[in-house]
Length: 85
Image (cartoon, rainbow, N blue to C red):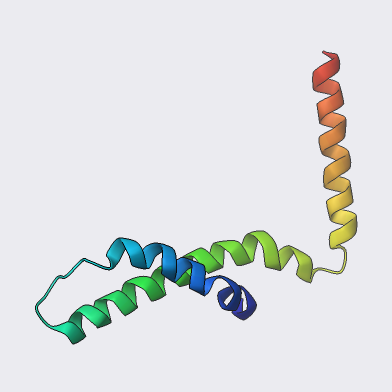
């Protein structure tokens, strides 16, 4: 998951940072900074966890090419059956 965080943290922080940039909950700069850090860190972990499960983890299995090929075959077969009906 470290690689996913490495690749996507900038995009997540950039996207969600724009939404929370002007949110000031207190008058303390450091407390607002801590709140931003917690919010953006949490969002980064949530988004990167989802991306890890969807993209990185399937490629960790040795049989992933065969699994992908089987999925494509089943999808084509279902598509043919649906279009012929």
